[in-house]
Amino acid sequence: MGKKDLLKSTAKEKTKKAAKKKVTAKKAAPKKAAAKKAAPKKAAAAEKAAAAEKAAAAEKAAAEKKAAEEKTAAEKAAAEKKAAEEKANAQKPAPAPKIPEPVYASQNVEEKDLSRKILFTIAACLIIIFTPIIIASHINTGKYYLEVTDGALELWQGDFEPIGKELTITMPGAVPPEIIKDVYSKKEVFPIVSGYLINKADNLLEANGLPDFQYIKSTLNAAKTYAVTKPLLQDINNRLTRIDFMVFLYEADVAAGMGTVEGRKAAIGHLKKAAMLDLGPLEAEMISKKIKSLQKIKAAPKINK
Image (cartoon, rainbow, N blue to C red; front, side, top):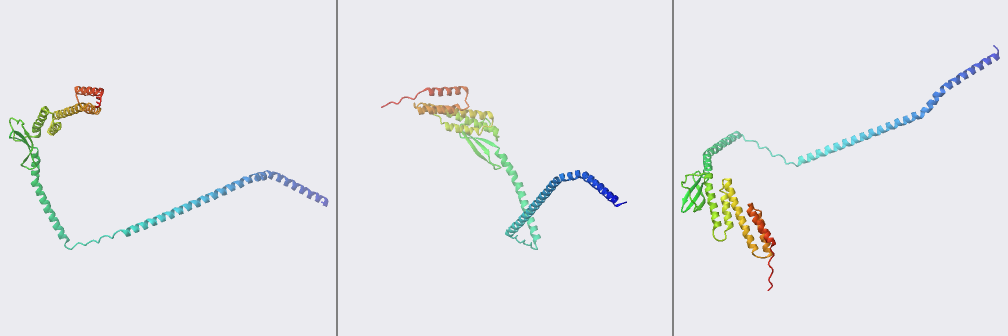
């Protein structure tokens, strides 16, 4: 092969290598372009990962700092509590020294037990002795006695002594029962006393002159303490209402008789009080008419001297 052929062969190989290199470069160009295009995204992802890592580190540091502060605060609180307890214990008075029991302590215990037994025995004996007396006294207070004296009937009640009685009430002019029993119960004797007091109040109302209404009411209130049945109690309450009614009417008449505006107003006030009582229909109507009549009346004119 001549020199000229060698050069041609060499040039041909170079051309072939260059063409091959150009083909290789052309094939690698898309990959290179894709890699170049993806580079910013990779850089952004790397920056984001770095920022997240940095934030996680900061969060971890803050948590560690907070835990350390809480631990310090807990240790400080525990120390303060311990110091306060030690101070409080130091201020407490020292416990009293325990006095050792003497050698003969067992003998003292035996003597105390014996004393207690004696006291219990005495107390039991007293209970046995006085219990019948107390029971008898209680039974005796429920016994009542009627005695006729000089024109009066007396009621006696058994007292708290086993044998004894005390005067409860004297009823002059009372009619005694035909047969007086040795002993009465409350239900037997109280109606007698209550009836006597009711009759006394009725006689005082029917007496001549202005009745003493306060004394009559006190007599009826005393009769209420002996009223052992509901009908009897209701009868007494009706009588008390009747007396209040009469008192208000009397006071209204006196006030209206003054012939003045003030007297008329006072009379109407008394009548209104009477209207508040538990009255029957006739009494209620009468009070209503009196009030209306007084409201129409004009005060008498003043006379000029």
